[in-house]
Amino acid sequence: MDISQKKRTLLKVIVLGDSGVGKTSLMNQYVYRKFSQHYKATIGADFVTKELQLDDKLVTLQIWDTAGQERFNSLGAAFYRGADCCVLVYDVNTKKTFDTLNNWHDEFIKQADLNDDEAFPFVLLGNKVDVDGGNSRRVTEKKAREWCASRGNLPYFETSAKEGYNVEEAFLYVAKITSENE
Ligand code: GDP
Ligand code: MG
Image 1 (spheres, rainbow, N blue to C red):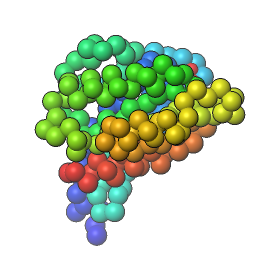
Image 2: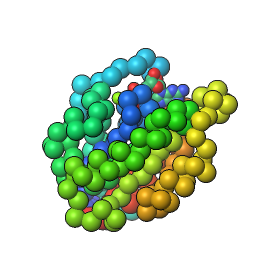
Image 3: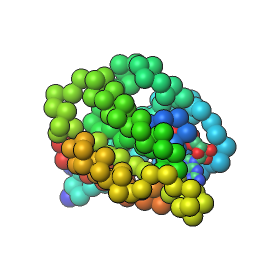
Image 4: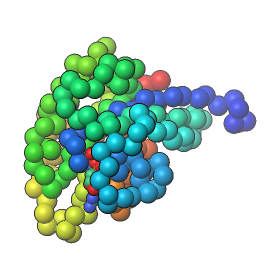
């Protein structure tokens, strides 16, 4: 098929989770294949885009980051409006970032004004699995999967933005499940 005849789809993906879990790093790794140790609270842009080809579809992922405003109710309605997928991120080495997942999940459902909460695609990422060879881990994969099961069987990926581990796979999965709904 001629590429110009392919269906083009724009998908809005929102990345949520506590400050410091690696949201910006995951996006930078996925889109630019870059990682920085230096902590920057904001990237100064609302979203980054990545184009990919899925079978007969051309998909543009528009990935929205929080610019250091990771407090509940601090993200405006425009941030959530028209979202096609929500990626929740926690840090496997910090229990608190796992405990707040309920709040992020609830907050998204409330703010995004979804037609059907249960059918909406959420994906959970457990990031920073590289740290200390896994020795400083505070949340087991089993616990994370139990949480996913309790929230309607959300898909789960363990990632390292630093090493690029599973990042491409996770976002490819996001693109696939999200474009199926279009
Ligand atoms: P955000 O606040 O959720 O956007 O988190 P950032 O992407 O700014 O990352 C916070 C800090 O964690 C930065 O110093 C990153 O370099 C670091 N970081 C992010 N992802 C990883 C990872 O997978 N492994 C390690 N070791 N550090 C990471
Ligand atoms: Mg950030």
